Length: 178
Image 1 (cartoon, rainbow, N blue to C red):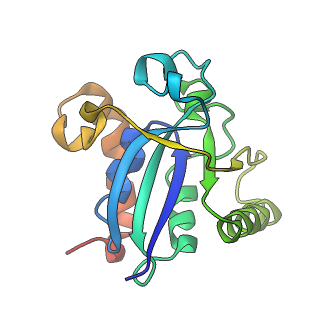
Image 2 (cartoon, one colour):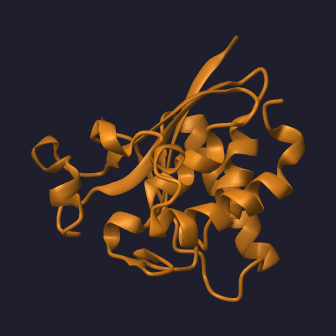
């Protein structure tokens, strides 16, 4: 097994975690924060939009089963990378589209993928995804872990997370754990 990590921001971390957690080759998905300081790495402060943090999912995966390229393909699919500092009704820099790379190879791959999507004009508007080195990942508070699974009747989960997860599972059905 070749264990690798990816840290991605695509709006609310509940959505990212719920989509990625059942993929073949994924070892774990931890919601959390990246881009800010340790003192402000908590939900209350991050929600102000003034901390520099993005809500992210830290994905640990087996690169023998799932490649970083495939992770990126799924990342671009689950959100609108043309929305600056928001995803749908979630507004603020904490919801920005972001790839926090772990090494130069991930940076090059993310930049290449972004250029390819830009050249193909996949979206009508320009892609605003930030590609930045991961300084530190801060895990979110425990009640955010497996949030969708633990709170399926929550209104946000019903109207935002569930449709994303259903669409994701439909498109990537062959990549899901049996």
